[in-house]
Length: 572
Image 1: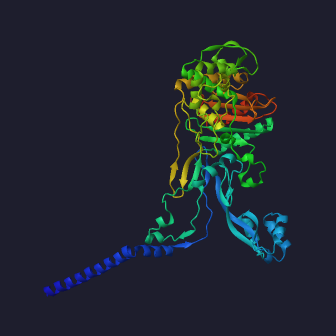
Image 2: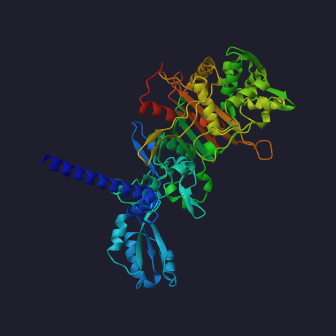
Image 3: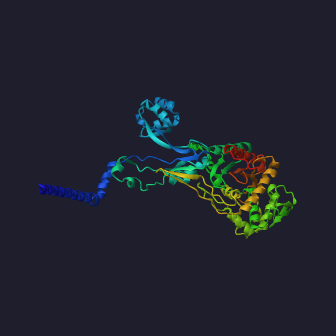
């Protein structure tokens, strides 16, 4: 009995072994011999051809509390097309469509007359509600086609920074602003494949559907704070209305991180209707794409170079004669008046050109040039916006050019810089001598769900911390006592600030005659632990000669707003 049981057990075990061997053989045949073919066949069950769809990552502002606010998104809806030969009553068809969605009558009638055309598109960006109102009539020859388009919910807000999506040839792509510079990240071109949600249970489709599991495509998060941006733009609009400059611009930046909190130029535009704009120059961001002689806001940097190099101190004096002749050229103070023997503080407080030239001469032209280059002038800042230009320091060479070149560069004439270069350089004064790296994007939110922070870090140290502290103290005195006679001084808040009024160079050399100037203004606060640095400029403002008259009060409007909005504690 026992021997029969053992025999049956052995036979059964043998059968199991045989079955196992057969299964292993079959598995080898499936996995190894014909694995690739079966994988292709299996994949085909779950991935089906589909129509290409347009997709694109979003762009977000970041509110003060960290909440993301949409700046650019994809919107879905419809476009309307007609088949002219199928339309039986063209006027009734127009009336019914127009009642739901106003369309161009003349364009519609021209399209209807093209009886030989099988497809004429007559309306775009049609909402679901409008489409529903049209669909209910079941109009012969009218087609509602699902569509997607780029939508900018904030309209004009930060338009030059955000940019827009347009056409490059027949290809839809980002053509200005972040839409252009972050095109590769934002573009999310569909492969046109549909993946069955159960597919990955049976197959490893991840590699088939996406060659990069992490995906480089996604949305971008900016440091632009929408309320601050709105305040900046409102202020610039006021400058445009009051002084009618050709254009005006400004920026608000965290000086320690380089994050741009607001950035704007005026005139502006609505990226939703960019195709209606007649002057395409408004698309450009002159903060990044323009270079100018910015005038006396260069003087604090000249002073810093002299102090940092040991050539002068804040207590140094010079004899101001009102005008001097350098290399056969005459340079003068703005009012042509002599001051006599005065200290360095008055060079900044009274914005004296001869004082700035004195500092450059004492510093030595090669050393002065070295500092100008160390500040980053003539080099790209690397800001994450397109079409950045560099300033032109070629008149300085390596310090061996005619003396007049350095003496005028010391007060911001004869050399050109971009506003973003100047913001970065002045940021070093607010950041204890270290250059910040201006940037707009703070994070990428990938399609995979991963969010990666972006921090370019800080730039090199260009000044000793003691130098930046010394110049900051001098600029506080400029604001408290020199600017508009001290009328803007705030009892409990310190500001380090300076104006600039620059002549505008003519293309063929020399400067435009008459009252044609570029006004600029910068300030950071609270001065000894700055939370913000604000920069403003206006090109050819009318009715006022000096920047103190056109930009000082707009600066204070922004500064007071920031103090209240961020509850910045007083520092004195």
